[in-house]
Image 1 (cartoon, rainbow, N blue to C red):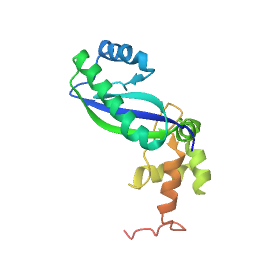
Image 2 (image 1 turned 180 degrees about the vertical axis):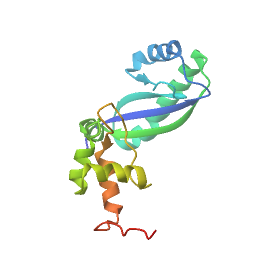
Image 3 (image 1 turned 30 degrees about the vertical axis):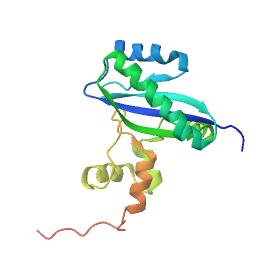
Length: 171
């Protein structure tokens, strides 16, 4: 088996979100290793992305050890209080497949949801108000609520539909 390329992502937790200055110092320290440092806003931590080559056993043992040692030295030099929180090792093919997946959910307005579940828009709004299993909209612009298609599909699979109108209550 020939050389294979691998992505190593080491996640670090911190007591507080790292500052932009701290992240820049880390990124500068990893520049020679062609690594990337990334953090989401308000996240208490950061990720370091490395690319390495070799058979999986060597990557998992030798190169990961080197990555962790290098990261520990650079993190210590920046003064950030951080500790490893997780490691992901993926092949280049796995990374490519993940990158090919859409990152924006398929959004549905009430009319679209009605078409998917086979009912009216009014019934969609009623379900949203009255059925605790109905998914919450992921956005509510002025044009009306928007739902994630995957959440609606999951709801439909578990929804016990009762045909007809409910019986009127006796007064």
